[in-house]
Figure 1 (spheres, rainbow, N blue to C red):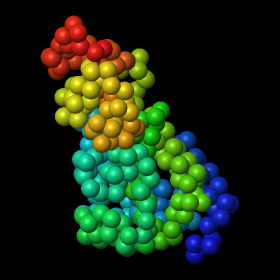
Figure 2: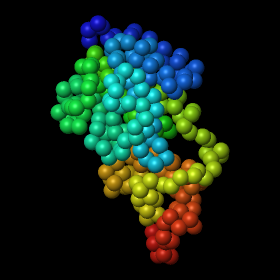
Figure 3: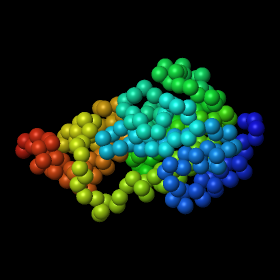
Figure 4: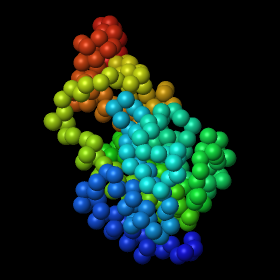
Length: 250
């Protein structure tokens, strides 16, 4: 199959197959396998991996297929500040893609990975405006992001919605979770205490707004609250934040 074989019918069929798989609530362990062997055949996909941003702010790889041992293997947790295309996509909330050679030049640490395909694409996974994870796909056919961007966005949305069923609970069912806030989440709380918006926090911390939004939702989960004001109040009561002086900005 050549790049010219990618057409709208191929893409529609691929999305229909992914929708069917997602509707069946797939097992996490087989999800990446289905992406490679069933969904992304038009791109001659070789490997796929899906990670979720955990409560401590790490990207935790949850399902893998096709990667050689030691390459994005199942289990590792990555700091979102790592200089790597997948964490870059998650941190910025933007697609990162290119040929294997091009990505190796842009990300020196990536050049040492044993990859067999010709292209890779890294997709941020967003749910309700917050980044919940990321997906890496290795393939032989170019992802054609200029012309196929709606397709890849739809793939990411379907995967995100499927994962969110398992990872997220409705706000009314949330209780205070065990486990500490990550250092980045603690810093975000300090910015929230000073009344800064998500955009202002993102600029100050050099992260995408979707990543900050995700961290704020995690803060809500840990503290068992549903608003920024409640989060700051709860953090002050728990001694996580120093109490505000009467003259401090809300």
